[in-house]
Image (cartoon, rainbow, N blue to C red; front, side, top):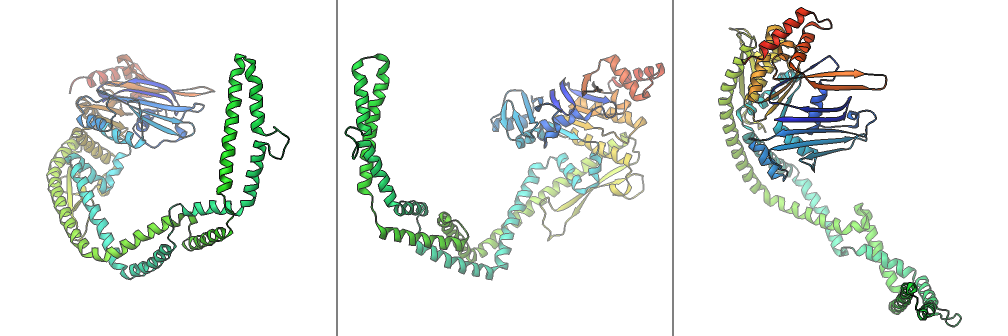
Length: 560
């Protein structure tokens, strides 16, 4: 569960430091006070995409640090061990976003890609927004809910993988069959190009070597003149006696050596070493001169070969130094094209085997879905009754796909149908559910999903929107019950929900001419009563309102 949350320079929050407890934590505050800041910050700590706009104005960076207790979460601990990020029973996720928009993620103090934050975050926390119920209007969401409830994820992944393998091979076969003539035409062209490059017999790095040699041969006279001039300067030839660089260095060191001054020892040694190095340089220059050739015939050969290389490079639309790699690539493509015709019959057999394997996995998934749907419908229906949807029923429809229709998600489409009144036929949610009904249906599904989920922390952002009165109290009871099994964080405007939390956080926004700040404060018992009274009575809080609020808080804290 989430035990500690620290937020710095995030949006309008300068610094927030919260200790969080098990159970149900409610978060309340005035409209626009910044209640969602805490949840948004959590989302970024767990890998959501972030930009520079979230950094508090004037700050260099925003930082969010979330600490989770992972005792008993074997899947989380196994993942941390596999990633070499394990640090005992606490796991710390940290996200830093700079004012320039750069982002860094950390797990237990080690820098990690944001994708790893997201992978781990999905195992630690489930965040449901106030608009989550609208996703129920999309049938693809229904399949995800059912598979999560049934624990089918491993099998679903196998179905996806088998479908992808079948599809990849099928596309390859269809492309091969549909373009047999195109393939042959392509092979003929490449065969000509390969023969042409094979005749050239270019070696790796040869173009670069030829270009270097060409420059050397083309400037041979200038090179030799420069080498000769440098040699003369070093040896003193054609100059005054003892005027060469070597002699001057030697004479200088000989002047200093007899002085026997300790502080002159190092410069004397350096001068002697310099004289030796100059002598070695002269030796190397003389060797270069002896080996250097003014071969005009060789220059002509180099120019001809480079010209041939450049002509072929233009033909292939590449740089000359890329010709060798181009030859290798064309050779591989030619081999592939020539092998494809031989592979078609083998591919057809492999495709049939993949098809049968995929069908077996889909059949297995269908059986599990049918079993899970019955249990899911029963539990969700019970929760809908608890939310004053009297007589309402949930029916999960598994519509088989056509036998020739392949799918990465199985052999059926999944859709939740609803009966709002006894005796009426089941219909899609989009056709018959009102906004308030949709909210309650969504909440019932979320409660059942959370009860069967391995994710320890559930975060709900105003999921009770559109619900009021006695139903709100029932929602509060559900969430409190859910909190007693795990950890629930709930942003709400409903006093009937707020009074039932095990922990109450209040969000307040303060403004001045220079800045705007948001604070999140844990409330004591008397402070909770004041906040519930505000939710009940608005701006003016009477003694009667306070008395009502106190009664609600007292009743809400009684074990259900």
